[in-house]
Image (cartoon, rainbow, N blue to C red; front, side, top):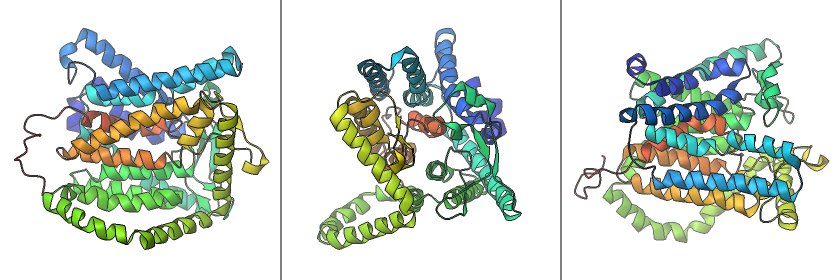
Length: 430
């Protein structure tokens, strides 16, 4: 199937295919961060050039949809907030240029890949098969690296010289089979991510996509790779989200049937009456998760408190412009990291926070609406739900170079509904 698709696809589609399936190749040379950041801008340039030279080969010819325009405008507002903050704090031209380049490798990638997904006519089947292959490679990587640990060899290999290009940190260019959890002394895998929780994030994203594969062999291999990633990454939040995603993804279609919606409406009052004991069980479970790694929980909580306090007292509108190294209390970790929303408040102020909150809310509502009519939109809604959930545990900006396959899938799913799709008398999927 993959070969057939590749034989008949455009250069943009081939770049997407090899960009996904060759992720481990780029990782082993320490260039995955560079590839993930550059590929979006390169494909965008190809699309714009094709739009001028070969407009008949551009999918969905016409105006850019309002939702993508919203993402473009709000991400440009983020850049403006960045410049204003740098000027307010006299950070200098050099830091302003570096931060602007960081914006190009972070927030700017979201509207770029949504744009690519909408206009590049990239087949969802090709995306799903590529992700299944990548997850299969992750399964092989997990087995091989586990053998490396069993025989007692070090998991760390080297730091790529590509670090000279610049990036959020050395971990984005380091190459390793596994790391050691300082709290437990046990190995913890980050796969091709910068750290282990990011691998858990990717496992959740990839699970949703792998479950869409029609070929049972590739689907099973892909899901097995996802399971290996979530277990070996030891991501607490990721494991909880991963478990919830399985029934959501498999049975979302059935939940939209009128009889199921009616049953949910009838059970809702009962759930409200039982909300207190149910919430207590949930809170107890969350507390158990936090106590599993108390050191990490303490650091994250302290980082959040410092970020909010300094944002509120020092730079409430446009933020501080850059992250800063934290005190010993947080083991020197950067203030504004480990959390999308606290990070936005600290770096870009309330302007930055609203610049992300508004398009995320609009995208959620639109995908939820489309999900009543289109299966692909239901998958995109599940993917975007993972983004929202993980925004409270990770910084979406610095992981955008890994999230782009899902962004392309979401972009391809926001196409306008056809007359046949909005027919009120058609049968919902069984």
